[in-house]
Length: 381
Image 1 (cartoon, one colour):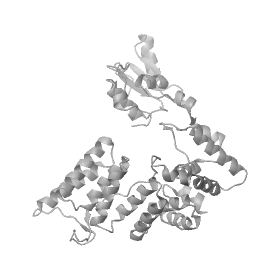
Image 2 (cartoon, one colour):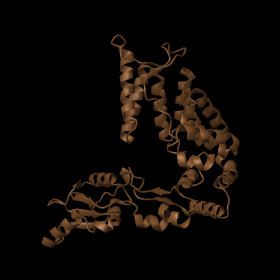
Image 3 (spheres, one colour):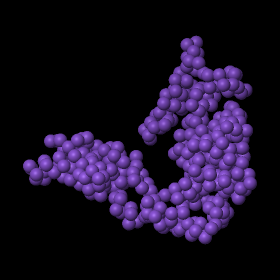
Image 4 (tube, helix red, strand yellow):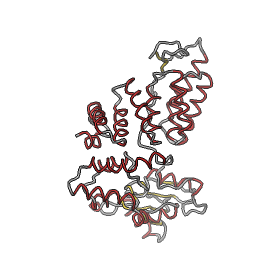
């Protein structure tokens, strides 16, 4: 669901879309097309891909100027010319108001959009904005299908850094100074937004050699007919893995599948780690931490648990602990680029640039075209 979409229990009970057949044309700015269609259905309406004799509402987003009016809009106007008022033609803002959403116009009045910031502060370009996000110095207030919006306080940080860059100061120095100034505050701010780190997921069902798991390290779990309990636990794990990249409903199915696997086999470390990842994704950090530690009690060399515990301590601004967990993860898997990246970020926040530089460079070597490549160049050069 788009961040601009209202939760299901906040949707207006009286809707202009109940019993209507709605068609969309043009690009929507405040909400994605799929989310808009889902909203119409939730409000009791139907969605049609084309303007037909059944269409009663046409929502018009941004049309491409070079192409003029879309075929859908022209068809709706033809039908209205033959029978006035047959199809109600709505702007995107009108659609948003009827659906209980914030309109793009209202967002632009309240916040500064990313496009506007690019014009106002060109030296803080997109890779640098991403760096400020990752370091926790700014936070987007709203995200829509077409833009990202920032409150005045965040714009102030961007403006100050833009001014300093214009005066010849390095971006890295400007960021480090602000991180140092905020370090004491962040250490006490346990409600601070979680970072961008994605937990490491176990993608293959394997047993590791521990005192409680006798099978050889790295050996895949086999669905053996003579061991029905192991077979059923593995099936539940594979069911969970199938769903835990999906939406909220799918995540709940994955959670239940992993729990069923663990009821049968409480030593299945992959199920423990992936269940912990779901808790982490839902900001349930206490539950996630307990599960990762459970996994380490069964397998002290579980790389995923070490890395993900680093993420939790980083998100809570417990930077020394985060560094320890990240270093342990890299001891077990030195080629995991994201571990180098988040260790470097953490060391920068602790004003330890000499140590961080090693890991910035390691990330560039391991993932030259990775998600964070542009950001890393700002710190490693």
